[in-house]
Image (tube, rainbow, N blue to C red; front, top):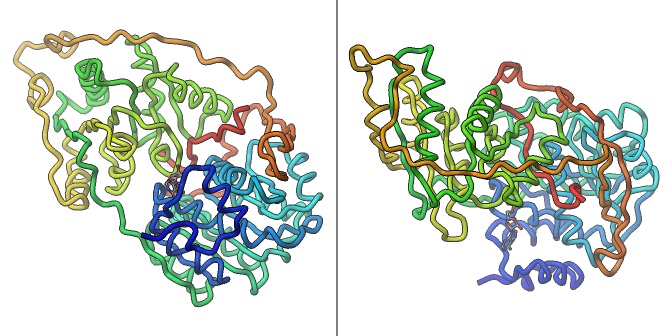
Length: 476
Ligand code: AMP
């Protein structure tokens, strides 16, 4: 078996890896790191959870350890589709570059330009950005990309979903032809293939098996039901969700409820709250500070249930949960695998329930095709009957013997001031003590300011865009 020590990384990088407790590289790391160290372009086809972030941060740190950054001319650039993913990459740099002096800046929306400008002016080795914010800085004349030695595009398929491909192409053209490119995508849509053919030079293709199967330790169930009529469909879905939640009893320690549409995230959250559950919601249109509070609450168990948009399943370091509820059948079959992968981590048991209305069966079929097995049906008498009994008034419908879980609703500590300490990765020697902290202000309302462009298809209520992980250092 390949060890980290076989990959050719410098002792300082190795020490940080050892501190993180890793001695065996993941397959994507084992394959990508040696090629990246050689200076080759890498096309990594891997999804989140494969260790791909360290797959590019480790060789970057190794290579950037020599040399110095010049003012306004970053030496490397990592593009991530969402601010949370960008922040997560930044957290990786902080972790793995703790014995190497590297200056880093994180350019994401929701944070004031002033502080970001100051960091860029000083010169940075690693610039981590969302495409929109990067171009904003560029257009303001504050940034030159002609010194980029290494450029990383992370989660290119999400960039495509979010309409960022033109921005990515533009950014590629602003960087020197001589740069090394490390490009990661979970899938290779034709548009992504086109970009890689245009901008990568003789890349080493590194592919890790797609996680198309679902873990055996996850008990999966789908409840297919037909509502009494279209009008009460959503209401009955919520009732069914509560019934399942309640009947899970002590097995349910915490759970994520995924909805396909942001509007449903809000409604489901309010409904659960009304019924006495400890619950928070998270999706791209919610204020950044609110999302941070909710995530913090969920992470420290103040909040038991998190209602989330789809993107929460992607790439974000949300703690393992006992239960995943698919309030809607995900439209993209792969999202099902991502969603339920939030439970049953590290060999623990997990439960994944899904609610399916007749119009969602086509999506369920696609999921079953992808995971190559049927999702076991759960019959729930009061719901799976297609027609109500004669004289039965919908309002009077009650589920018999529904056990109740009493959940404590605790308030999440509000963030006292509109300032967050962002730990910049100006690190030298010993970790935390030498960390420079830079105050940046968070715009009080980041609503609708999240991204420059979006796919026209996503202009409606379909969930898009923002990830949900807020790294610890942003929370301090
Ligand atoms: P990523 O796919 O980069 O989002 O990484 C997924 C998770 O795997 C992160 O929580 C990492 O800390 C963890 N990880 C990265 N590399 C390794 C490794 N070599 N061994 C074990 N876990 C790792």
